[in-house]
Length: 138
Image (cartoon, rainbow, N blue to C red):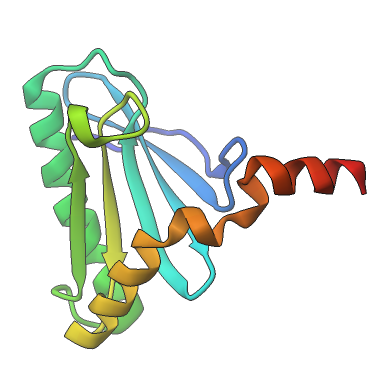
């Protein structure tokens, strides 16, 4: 894996900076910080193509592990304060492989992160169709 020379910028339609990386195969992936109420340390590492090999997915997962350690060390001074969630093809909403990285300082904090993560679609109430219509009218 080599770091690309891509500059940091706003991810389109997302709340947080996205950093471009390249896998050894040349496939591009991005690390972006997501914002959710009650969850300050939530990141997603994603390949931006659904046409990738199983070795690309394996490398993405290994990269997520290394990034998780780095983020945990940066946030809490301990490289073992993180959890990874990988979405395989049949269980993901988006077509491309991605890994959720939740940085948590304790088991209790991890449980809170998982709860908020599970509720993320409810917490993003502005995306609800009815709410979106009301917001657009106002």
